Length: 70
Image 1 (cartoon, helix red, strand yellow):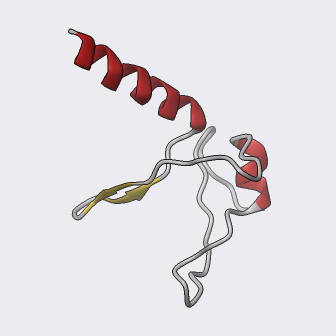
Image 2: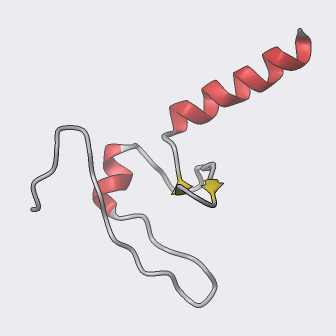
């Protein structure tokens, strides 16, 4: 296994013809990604693509709805 700073990881994946890729098992285990989970994908032209952990999705969801109520 390749050395990395604590808490920092990197994986490579191949994109298929339909634009799909498989999240490596180690990443799924680390971030508790289960079949049927909904993930959020952020894109920034300059910085790239990010898939935050599920807990971040819940926090973003709360933040959006709290702003609507205020």
